[in-house]
Image (cartoon, rainbow, N blue to C red; front, top):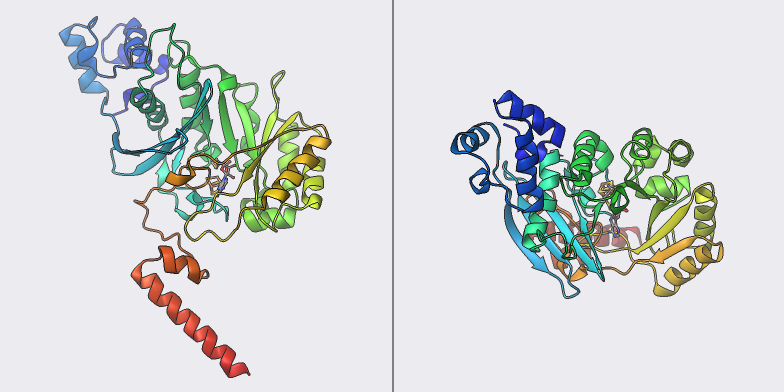
Length: 386
Ligand code: SAH
Ligand code: SF4
């Protein structure tokens, strides 16, 4: 049975008709759900008992469970939501002045294995449905008490698909969710307030522009094929030339620009030469470069660039006349920053045995033992060499 959050308004009208209700009931239901924040047919006072029963029988209204809510010192909130099949996903709210951005997940885990990303260590369990994507927004608004009348300023103003997963590998559901977010009778958000972030799934990029009308962010992280392939194996499949070509075919709406995400990794992609390559790659596009200091996670094999290197990189981009932000890391104390999301329900270990100091702190007993043995073997073999 489909969930109520799965339906775009047109789909819900058709469903109403199918179960013998008048199509205008869809608009009424949406008003309760997306404007008043009540997703329970019993609360819909303009429906008769028979209509309520029909809805309950044919549509799933069960909400994901909020299993954890963590607040960071800087106001960032991270929620863990439990889905009907027991899978867990993370959603993060980042307040910043008048703006409140919700970072939503599109998959449980990810098939891609970007080396700097915590989610990348968690195998893909499955795609999220459109309803599960909408549920993150709906529940966040409920938790924030943000279902208020039209005159009150909204707390949640922007959505970014930068949580767990690659949105373009779950395109149909992500696009349906965007339609519900943008629908004037849904969350009524402008396309400018929604950003889909992709690691560079070149053939899928074109449709985001004119058709859907949301913003595009590309996780570039290096404009050098060799380096990019090392840190983002997807680059082997869609190397920089292919990615650039697909972006040239992407019809950017007027007055919009592409956001380039660039995680600064010490000694990997943070030199002046790297900055030059980046500038060359983005030259054909109206651009905003988002520099992100690397957020470490247990077992992560990289270090964050030094502050001096971060600033020098930013200054080089700015000098070329390109808008650039050096993003402050938010929510770090609760592992809610970019790339730190990973539901603990995953069985895969994030701790790499190659980093004994990390294993010593974060590893489980078995890993600690293995690590010790590995070290022992290493020492013994070196001794043998001499
Ligand atoms: N899969 C999509 C969207 C989710 S990742 C994508 O890759 O674009 C959201 C952003 O967080 C991406 O730009 C990603 O590269 C970045 N990110 C991943 N791990 C990170 C880390 N450890 N520190 C900082 N940013 C990270
Ligand atoms: Fe997946 Fe994005 Fe993480 Fe890469 S950075 S592993 S694409 S979530």
